[in-house]
Image (cartoon, rainbow, N blue to C red):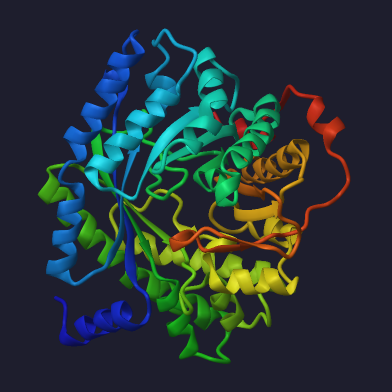
Length: 452
């Protein structure tokens, strides 16, 4: 039974503490769209997406009005296009991205994810075609997001793919130079990618998923920050318990919205992803949570320990609140999307090396980080390799979303607008990674892969 106090508390969380449903994402299988004729395939992709998701936005808006809960984004994820287009007799996969873009626009969603390939152990010809198409696809579409999974704990790291993705990122930045390299903000390189992630830019609909599914991403850094302000000076045990209880309340709201959207759309409920995904708004920052725990500035000593506590407590609270917690649940640290992270990066306290250490204990990885435009492809690839190694060895999802901002140097800022925020260009090490990346081949899977 929900009492009056709980209702008033939820209203305060929404009204004053930035609590929202970050996204309702409909996953759609496109496996039945495969066809040897690329035009037929593209048409089938468009028809399947628009037919499946035509009521998604309308339903989300109705739930917002009736429940008074903000739903910031309505999104779509689809089967990795490298699988769908494999039967097509074509070298150019850009038309499939454009079909996705038109369908997303027709449905009225914010983004569509799934222009993706899974190459952790090797390439198919279709994978190679898709990866070659990524720069032009992202430069000529507005809503399409792309991802490539280059490693896993089971397979190791495909270093040929890592090397190629450094070049792809550079080309994508060049083709979208007039927008600060914006195309790179829609491109994620994964290790251990999950099949039910509702968050962009890395969402795709895994082959183990149902025909259609509803996944919901909830976010509430402001709520957690507010809760911690009430326990200043308390021990870490109390901090952890407070975060767990807060995460429980946030996730319950996400479960309610997910089940209601599932019922109204006639689509199975998949998962609630409780990820503390920040925004550029003041008071909606993961960095400020870490500083409330006691770190003077995010990136200073103690940051990694504070983030480990936060991430663990969020997961524990969320698991108790929902029958199906999934995706990437935890705490995100996208630099350009977090007001506190932006400030810490601009002050020089938060560095790329410290961010890499933080990714060992939180969700995802090096996210929305702008680096100098003249950063080499090999250096980008080496950063990807380092982050993939963390994911592989620790059996966790890690990802890299780097923006080599064309014409920008350390200290410059790049404006992306909206939830993508403002990126302060961060320094990278000047030592060459050319010899390391040129080796190619595969970094073998670690011992912990042998679990059978």
